[in-house]
Image 1 (cartoon, one colour):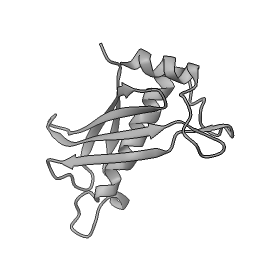
Image 2: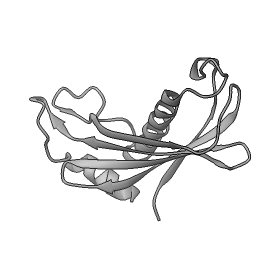
Image 3: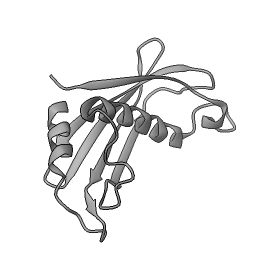
Amino acid sequence: MPVVHEEKLRVSWVDTDASGRIHYTAALRYFEVAEHGLMRRLMGGLTWVGNPEFGLPRVHVEADYKLGLSFQDEITCSARVAHVGNSSASYAYEIRNLAGQVAITGKIVVVAMDRTGRAAPLPPALRAALEKGL
């Protein structure tokens, strides 16, 4: 059974465009909030953040917008590990409105990078945590 982490959020004014609806970039920030919560749960903390020897840059991001969200809407953003490779991992996301309807789905792929900027195998502790989430 995959580990799914949920964050309850509210659409802020800064997350909307001139129409009062969610700006498309806001979903990516919500995804990251849920991802960090998931990783705290899987690893007992964000142990890779600020490590000068290792990074996890995003190499692919996608989002599908199914329902509009507006200023002050209450939402739930969930994150789960979708795939673990040798040097990469992917996360799947879902944002639901207060009624439980799916508003946005998405995926982010990260690649382990060493301090020279080259792809590297996922560190063993990170790999174990990610695999625990599958």
